[in-house]
Image 1 (cartoon, one colour):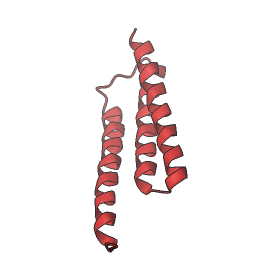
Image 2 (cartoon, rainbow, N blue to C red):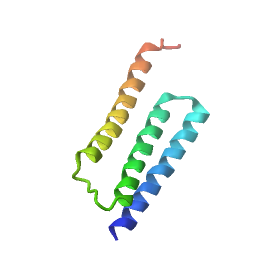
Image 3 (cartoon, helix red, strand yellow):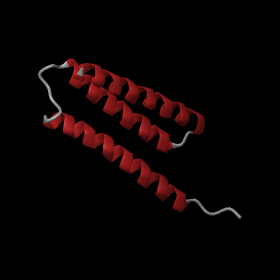
Image 4 (cartoon, rainbow, N blue to C red):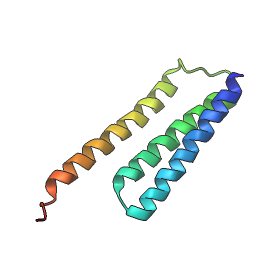
Length: 91
């Protein structure tokens, strides 16, 4: 049952990553690109958890992947807000 759920979560992460990549392709906004990369990393993490039976979520490698994913999301939000302030207001 756990392997099936890990596969479903990995598939969902890859699907969301493709949706964000499509949004980035349409708008060329880096915000969507950062989110696409973050969800791709999260999907790879879940896929590796399911493929390697000796691994568990408690290993530092998977925590570091998840931390990297969350840092990318945080950076996307910060970058979006900083770029919004730098552009002059049009009246």
